[in-house]
Image 1 (cartoon, helix red, strand yellow):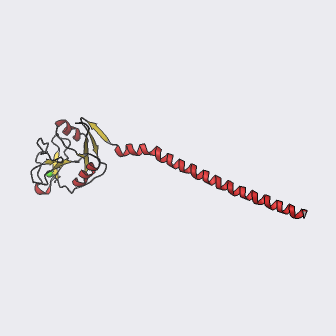
Image 2: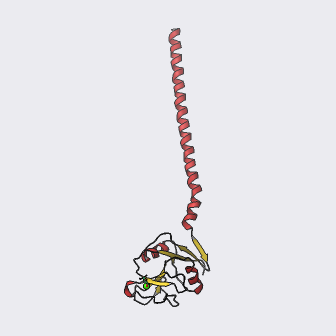
Image 3: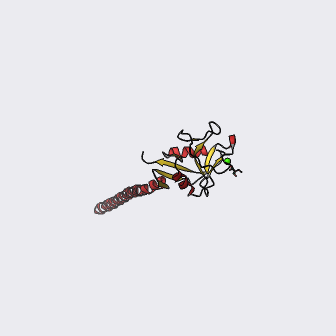
Length: 179
Ligand code: MMA
Ligand code: CA
């Protein structure tokens, strides 16, 4: 019976040992998963400001507005939509300084100018009529087939061209800052 007692004791010790081992493995797993979760959350948090600056980036300040030249090409209408989504609008050129500013990008760019409603009656995307213009010589020449305005002959102050609205081009958004 002394032998049986010893055997039970040994079995109990082994069982307890195994139980402890399983508990330890479980504990380590839980701690590891919790720490891993904390790590992932901290990574997400620390990368957020970077993402935000990237999303809001590429805006250039000039006078009372911010301007953003696109990184891809789209039709005039899709460009207009992109600016609206960003709380902005396709660039509206009211002053000579703005005209010289946009030419400095040395890029063909859609601006917020169209005569889609009535041929020859050029309007800005805010609904105002175009009064001062910077058409290149011979432009606008597209009649009913070129109803959207672009900056194209940027080496000349008079850089505007009328082009077919469906053509995919880079574009420039404008966000008015104050008044
Ligand atoms: C292209 C087109 C027109 C523009 C002329 C100027 C050939 O057509 O962009 O809109 O008026 O070039 O040469
Ligand atoms: Ca033209």
